[in-house]
Image (cartoon, rainbow, N blue to C red):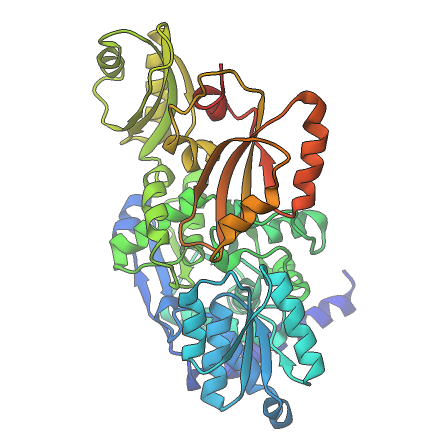
Length: 516
């Protein structure tokens, strides 16, 4: 890098620090607390501090950036009103900011947005327009609206003043906790990471800045590998607050310079972190809100870190209550306190007792079985663990030594999401079928529309649907088909416009649901 480039980057960073220090966000936002997680600190053998952005009036840090952006608009721009597209925390932050400044705000939200979020935005005085089944459709409408009515479009993350507003989280954190070794920051579009990282690295460059993303929505990781922002083919929407297909241009430039590392975590690990925050703080975080703690835990374990002072951000607490059922179901798996395995046992009297004796009286959390034939049976078993992966390896070895065939399904998403609720569903007659998992936007009548969209060209031989208060429904469906029709079926699925995956070779399907 040339001296001129270095100087330009330094000027940009100094400009952000200046705007972070002078951001007038405390007209509406509050300086949130930092709490030490006592139980977590003891477990990890590190001091762990969490920045409580759930304490903001809209229960999310997004208020900071939204208000800072509005505060820097001209009066003429404010008089024309503002518009944004969002299904979550940006919508609420912008709506309250606009109300405080007496500005007309229009929030375009997908038709799939849960009613509780729509009502929350309307409760802050914003005009809500429901358009399309996805964020992209809503965003396109918002951009057109901004052009047609000369309104100011407020980007949720890729904007200088939004980034600076989010950077105030770092300003407070460094004042509240001294001598931090590392700070873990959740990443969606990158606004919070960019704002915090540029500030931290100018004042305390020795602090390790680590971004945390969901494995199924790792747009920063993909951009770093490509050297530029790129579109993800699919985005996992479990942590909807960070379910972003493409990181911002401005946010990526700052993250590339000032973020030291990126950690990715899965849904089960986020669920476990939600429970950790509840246990220590009695706070109920949304999945994106617990993301950075999940990353902190994983990073500490992978790198054998002890005796350090670490911090993370509880970035939001706007959780649909219905989702807690799913969170509770997956927490033990995320904490490695439970495992699920498939075991082949002989079909005879006393076989289950013998199986339990072999695993040494371990606590069974789940046991699924249905008679299939007179020689052997497949059982789906949940086992409680006290020593994580090491204990699971011992159990599998004990069963293998005793002559059992064992398959570990703990990381098999199909098994955890669908198959565990369907064990014993093998058809009596042999059938040629292919099985697929689907995601589709969730709204009233969505399931019926999904079935109608699939059409009647193929006989559906298996169907299982689950929804956990999320914006998307999860479906497992099998179709009776022949090899000659496989290409035709795949072409049909491509044309539907849903996210889908062929699960025909998934071991949990083959063991528990496929016809003999």
